Length: 466
Image (tube, rainbow, N blue to C red; front, top):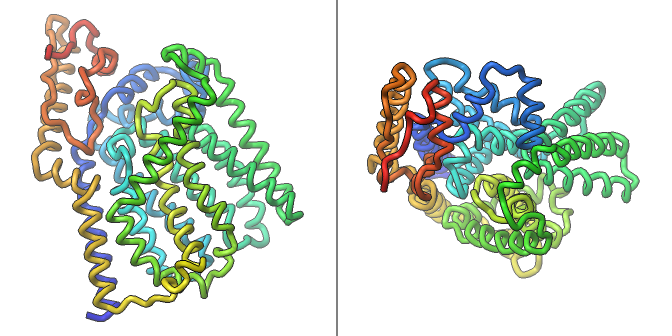
């Protein structure tokens, strides 16, 4: 089998590996905050809603707008729109990665090769995500964090790569300022990453006396203004009052460093990442010839970036709550860890111990074995395996049945105040779809939010005892 046929087969198998994640979207249901935000924002203007959230809950001025206008407000039949969101976000993640790859490699590859690289990135990211349920299939978490990451990919693509010319320079500058303000307002993680990115970029341009210092300063000021609006929101204190042991600097830094070791270790030891890293060696050989400027980054700085990335994605949680209560923030670290890993691989392949490996050309047989191992790893480990278990083991279908039953019960209770609803506890919950019963009893506030959304009284709805 020649290389062209191998790559075509590899591409088809990657698309097949992606299909299960798209299929899972057909079982997604709104839970928890989805109902809370929809119920709270009903009938409120966007300004009144945003001001209320800023004053009494958080300063996320960008994502809060999307919470008020989510799929639960689009139609009385809420599921079609809700289930379309994860599919759209996967498509936009693919396009964002393709755009970034195309920009930073400066057309070193053909469009087909770029699209294949973006597809590999997407499937690998879906496999490695610490919490894929909250990352894609839960609207509140997906829009807040995943959409923020997609916009960040586009922003990076516009900032780096081949310089624009003519009127495009002004258009891209204005677009970058707008993106900077929006991304900062999505959540605290992207806020911190944006501050670090633009502080480093502006400082580097000033030190090198390079062109673009003025535009970099304007963007940095826009980022700082958005960050101030986020950080100074009175609602942060209201939310923080719900937790103890907050604002402990050394505890937050220490725990963030430990989480960096933990998650980077998990990702580096992933069979899927290791198999794709072996396949990347010939790609590095091509990049070295066509895009040598990528290899001018200090390998020591590049090696530090993944650690700083994970710390930046865990520090806000420890600082504001004292614990890392959920892993959707680590999804942000994961999406940027993947390209940083391959950047590090390229840089270290040019160092003396690994330089001979960089010149290796895999024969078709070895290339085929590497591709087979990559496909098997993407499908039989971590989220890939969990998705198959949920789909073919009946967990996703059972989850769908129970959630539909609950929705019908609450709708009926809204029509008849005499009806009392007791939710049947979800047994054998799915591993890839969002739920909270596996972590203990479903919190009362989650049940009450669903009751309010459908128009029932909170006293009408409860959960069966253990």
